[in-house]
Length: 173
Image (cartoon, rainbow, N blue to C red; front, side, top):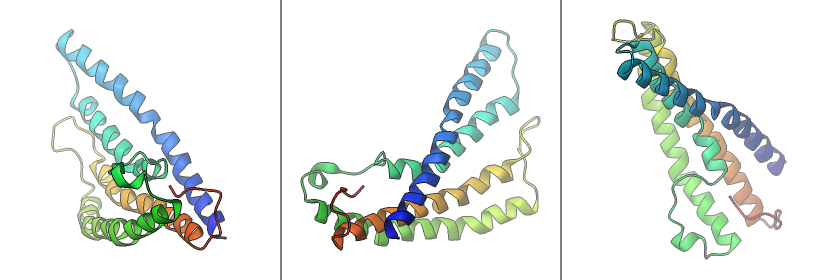
């Protein structure tokens, strides 16, 4: 059951990560067009520039769980790479329980009123001609710790499987 739960969480973050990755292409195209419009045609739109910020924020905040799942997060591997699978599982479990989960909780706890206020006033851009849905962008701040925390659950479950001897075939990730 633990493995099935971890696999389900992995599948969710994989699906989300693969979908949101397309924002990097869209972001590059919009930025290219913005530069061409500005420097070749001496024209441009604020909403176009802001859309790059929206895409960038969404890409990195929503793909954090995907990054954790695929070990693309920042970690100092000087010691970690040279220890046994059991010790890696202990490091992963400790790090998830005492570092990742509290961080996700604090981010969610302090961001919630901020996002709630933004929704209450349907916050839009402060720039004339900017994008109206700033409150939607700010909602991504809450999505970030949820998806990252979920992936932490999967990471902790896999570590528990290794520590209990239930999963000898996999190295903890």
